[in-house]
Length: 354
Figure 1: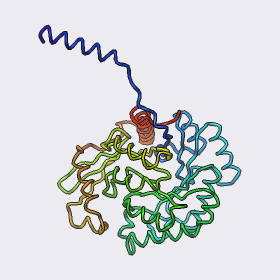
Figure 2: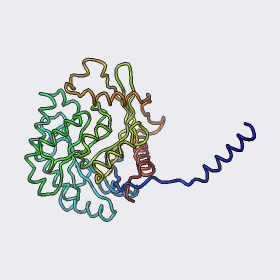
Figure 3: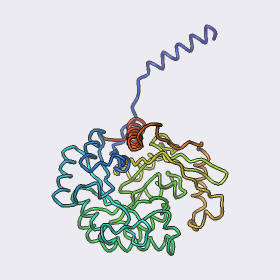
Figure 4: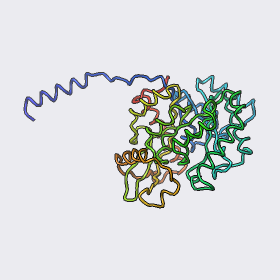
């Protein structure tokens, strides 16, 4: 390096060090996490609230009824009081309300009884939504196909409309585990009635339904009342592609484009992280038999997914450290993934109000 270039380098380095760090503009969008992100901890609602307060989040999304020690009214009111005292808003939910889905369980009674219970719990803990699901990708080939299950879910929603409207709690249906593409979920909501049913849009589940997360948001954002968000890495293989879910900021979602659309379509909906990382799943869409569950995929939308996959690079799946207890390794991994995501959301995306 000659004298001039050395002087130039030193000067530029000094100038760079003198430039103060500029935090991203605050978006005034609440930030939270889904209890499933730290599922290995086995925490109940009270412990989840303590952790939420320690992480200084605005929202705790409790998507499992089993996370409450009791569903008695007195206990749920105590949970709400603790949340209020800590300054954390609870969002509530449960699982399948579709009686024809392979994911439906009768642990909470019939599908209608289950949904009525979720609405009751949501009201008592102060949640504006009752998040539920149809099922999973298995339902695309179960019975008469996904249309049958959409119709079943719509019927259940309509049966409880009066309770939902009276309670002021909106039913939030998630695109879950490859069950629904965004346009199918939008159609379900329109058929049931968007005055009391909305979308819980999931950016990670979008890629399991062959959708670019930004494209998924473009369709569901206007229906959005809640969400479950994570990053994804997708890369091409000789048979199609492989998907790995990641912490927010560790994958290849275009968060700048995502947040621009988010701010336009649903700025009052909290940004809720549900990290489920560490494993790879193959999608061999270059094999003809792959397409049986997907007879109505829209070509222009699938092209966006393929373009998304082309930007990715292969990654190894996570493995627990040698010699470490598996439960402890899972707990440490999940907490680190979530806390790294929260940091990225605050420092890079400007999310959170605390």
